[in-house]
Length: 150
Image (cartoon, rainbow, N blue to C red; front, side, top):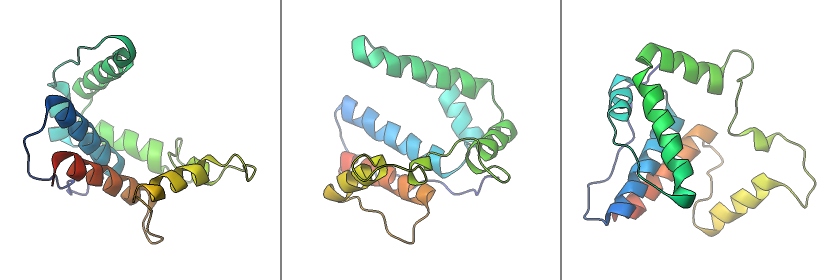
């Protein structure tokens, strides 16, 4: 199912370690929203260093550990199948990160409207012609560019 396309990353600029880590996470999120991870990405995730964190950041460290262990136990074909089953599906996907667009809310508590307003206020409004997955991928890639100074 892989399209063979990768998310273009900006040229590396000298960043503080925390900002570089943030850039890397956004780039990873862009890749994972765009398509199933390929063999190369699975290998990189499986070989990634642990995150050492305390307090609030420990949830991120645990989630990262779970992701690296899952990547180590998964092959490319299984990842593609899982991605298809979860996000695309036949008929209806099991999980839709865009489901908020279809849920009935009152005019005063529509989280999608609030999110779109927040994104628009920060210059991240969605083009009407963009698919939701392309929109998220491009937004994460834009954040990578802004954080890395490109």
